[in-house]
Each structure stands twice: as structure tokens, then as C-alpha cells.
Image (cartoon, rainbow, N blue to C red; front, side, top):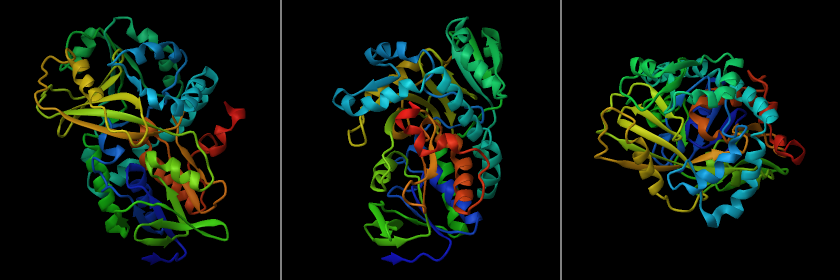
Length: 424
């Protein structure tokens, strides 16, 4: 099978949240769109399906923060800690981890935080009209986000992050134990203090959101292909289409938004990007019935509890083991153990486990740029823990780039060349 470029024909590689948002934005700019992904949009095979569901315009703190390095040995030695590296994979992950630690320097953190804020502050503005058009505005719930501590002085350890958020105009409230009970009575009395971000949002079913946005794109004329992209076609040395098991497909624009699988395809185009799969786990507890209403993060135990349509979702942990190793579901089971005592009522009698591949850059922000050697190819991957937050904004940006328009934000922090040695 072969397709021919027709002037404004775009191929999107990837049908996760970034891919489906990009497809919709391209269609709105007058492109015809084909989307390639071996997984169905919104299915458990996608990273988008299994995240904690936050749609948070105030998400502006990178994963690597000043002082993080001192915690790493303790985390690695704790079988229930938030970080795990399979020993056989350590040599492969080490260069990325070194860049990750360097990204936690204060001078870098403040620049990264500004870039995150620029991208995420537009989340509601980009998502709401898209969700309304798709008929799923119920999937955006603005109930805020809660970070809870088991010590009365807990927020003092997050003072730098609070100042950084507030410098970007993010509302942060400090709560006492009594305030916590008034706001979220589902939580147990073990929490003595909290930080509350009232303007954050929650999606109670990320998989359904991706599915609904894909259906919207199909109604607008997009064609979805359930097959992988194995490589690229070239014309006069420049990428001009994609190669799949069914044949060659030409395009005027190609958007690489394949999540954790994007690094290998970018290498085929001549771009080597420090990129890792930050494997994440969740458990769904359909019968837990805690009564939780607000997405709640245990600041001490480093996991997230999210109320979902299908029950309670506990998510978190980062595992480095690559794309091919089977899941280690002991990582998921540890989340259930960590949540013991978090709620006044908690019944984990039925547990559904999941593992997905977060596409991670060492500085916590995505690559949104044109391939160095291929002017037709736009990169839109590496959102890591914030893919759901930045999905609709990224889609708009990519569509503007593809149409020759100026994007809504400064894209220099998201460029490929930031990974050069001189920028470490």
C-alpha cells in the first residue's frame, strides 16, 4: 500500500495523548491526517492509559530538584522506594542518570521550571474547547491537588518548590491537620499538614479521554492505522514519508509523537537524544470505596492516590529496565502496601496491576523541535510524567509549526540542541 503527499498531508506517529491532540490540531489547520500506532487509542498498551490523571496548569517543578541526590541511595536500597534500577540495565541508564542529576542544579531548575510553566499554564485553555467538541468535558474535574505530610512541619521541606510555584503565579495553600479533614475527610488522621493547589485538575479516565479525542479526529477525517512505523522514506536525502508493514506512506509533514519508542526512530533520522523509558506502575482498586474526591500525593512515600471512574488508582515509582524487560509487578504491589493507613476506609480486595513506559528526558521537559536534518519532521515527545498535562498545548504548537505559524510559547527550551555538552 502506498499513499501520496497532496500538499497538506500529515502523518502522526503515535496515537497516545500527544498524538491524538496533534491530529485534531492539524485537522483544524486544514491538513489531512493519518495516524500510525500498533496500539488502539486509549488502550492499556499506551502510557497515556495508566497515568495518575492530573491535568495541572500549575505543574512547574521538574523531577530533579536541588538536594535530590542525597535521597537516591536510600530510595535504591528501599524495596518499596520510589526509584528502582535493574542492575543489568544500570550501564545503559547511567549517562541519562548523570544528566538527570545535573538538571537538578538550582540554575537549571529555575530555567526548566519556567519552560514547564510556559507549556502547562495553557492546559485548560487548550483542553476545554477540544473536550467540548469531543463531548467529554466531564473528564476535566477542577478539584485541586493535595500534597500531604505525616509531620506537622512537612511543608517546610518543600519551601523552595512552593516559592518557585508562587513565582509563576500558582496558588499554593498551607493546611493544618484540621484543614485537611475539612477539605478531604476521606483521609486518615496520620496526615498533620498539607499543601493544597486549588487550581489543579483531574481526569478520572485518561484512557477514555484519548479514545474520545481519537474518535473526534476520525469524525473530522483522520485515518488511524493499527501498525507500527519501522522507518522512513527519503527523497533527495530528506524524510518524505514512513515505512510500515503495509507499505510506504508519503507525507508533507511527519510528527514523531511515539512516546518511549520515539528515541529509536529519531536515531534513524540522525538525532541522538538522551532518552529513557521511566517505567511506571499503577494499581486500580475498584472496590476500595475510600470516598476520596481530590487527587492526593503522599509527599513522604512518593505516590499518588487518584479517584477514577473505575475506582481508586494508586500510581507512582520509577523503574529503569528498558523497553523489553517484563514488568516487575512487585513494584505495583508495593503501592497497595504504602497506601495502608492513608484512608479511613480502605479495602484492597480486588487489585488490577498495570505497567507503562513514560518517555523521559533528563530535564523533565519534552522535545518539541524540527529534526536537524529533515525539515518535514517535527518531534513532539519526552513529556515524561506530564504528558496528559501538556497534550493539548503540544498539539496546538505542533500544528502551528507545521502550518508555518508562530507558536504560542518560546520553544527554545524545548530544542534538540539543549542536550549538547556545553549545556550540561
